[in-house]
Length: 306
Image (cartoon, rainbow, N blue to C red; front, side):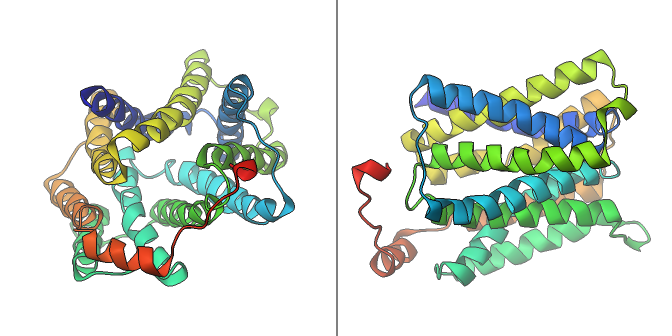
């Protein structure tokens, strides 16, 4: 079990650091071009792994009705908004805003999947939203910049993609869904990047190219595989606790590499956000899960569909 916890900690450390690396890369590459290059690298890694392990499967037309919107919302819009926001928003602030994703996904699940909302979830959401006001607040009042709005859009599209992925994985394996959605998103991003951010108009440094490909393969590809495998061993509840460490990793790495200051207000806001997320993700599930299981019994999936 300790090995699983260390692997989960490794993933969260990579993901938290990825905010800082992204902040560095957006000054070397335009947002759409950066998204296209990273997603292409990740897609090639995932396809190679799926092909090598013989896990690549053919899908039916019904699956693509969710995969195509998932690629557009969860990959194209999410990545474009994320990297556009990082041009003006610090890695620490971005990581804190994106830590609201579990709460947002929970609220969306209650609306579209009819899952139960408990009092604890409501209180946790309110506490986390209060934290956001501290994080994006200034000494002379609140200031929602265009960068903040981009990061909020990235958070919302990520939460929506979680709901879509949950519906999709009722029929197909989560890994296969991840591979196909990433490849479809890459195919969508590439033409946009070619038109909007031609490669011949930029001249990144060598370190930027190395950082781009390494972070794409390790943070988005390898860590995604490790995380999915460890979820089966430790469970979603325990694994989700590790995700709350991402903002603190981003704070530390941002301070060490970029000298990004961490204010007292941000610390208060981060504690509220993480506290709110913990309230929601570590709620007592027995009663709610029992009700959900009675209302939505999982369908038996034939072996041919995996």
